Length: 289
Image (cartoon, rainbow, N blue to C red; front, side, top):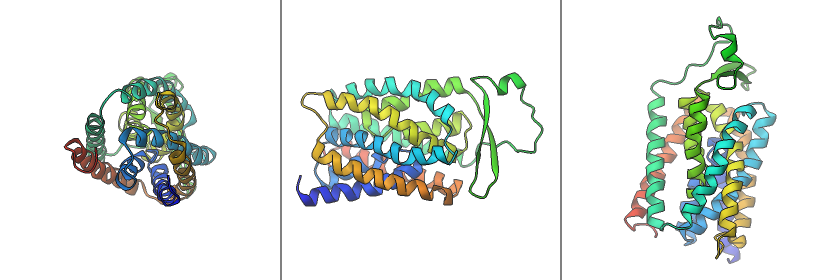
């Protein structure tokens, strides 16, 4: 790694951290293709670097969201119980498959997530009106599998919502952990749609909660990449990327409150579509191995 390469890696990570923190996806969607494109890094090393940087994204952004009471701590910890073990399995698989297969899996996951998020824009989840009559049975509202919670918007408005289908959400979150370990993207590309579409959590809560879940998930996967022989974690690359992501995530989390729900969703869909195309090209040997 030359000084110029380190500077490029830092700038890539800075942008990725800010964007990834805002979208709750950890920045891996930007870091992995950018490192392979601009620095010629192999896909496995780029994935390992990304999954280490995902931890920094979570530390930089998730902390802020928890203090602002936007991220749902209870829900996040519950989902992390499913994502962490499956991240280890995903990382083990990634160390034994080829780059083109990884790119193909990457493209498929991106396309499915983009489609589901775009479809949800036509019929967004209904939020509970704070003044509405509560028609939910009391036992259901207090149970582990169906619980009410709330967050405060930047204008001071209290938004109530009820987490639905927690059992299904936890089961589906194992896929998010698998994707995190396998592709190094933090799992947010699956976790955000799961929370928003299946569990009926508002998109802003879903993205912020995902931001701190991905840190827990990434730690599990990073251990596998680091202990592989030869190790896929290159400290000379991981250090500038991690610093850049941490700074970018801190900046990105501070601007989330000024971004509308619609803008978040549209940006998320656009990012997924662009990078799915790039991964499809990689499957056919175009734009990297």
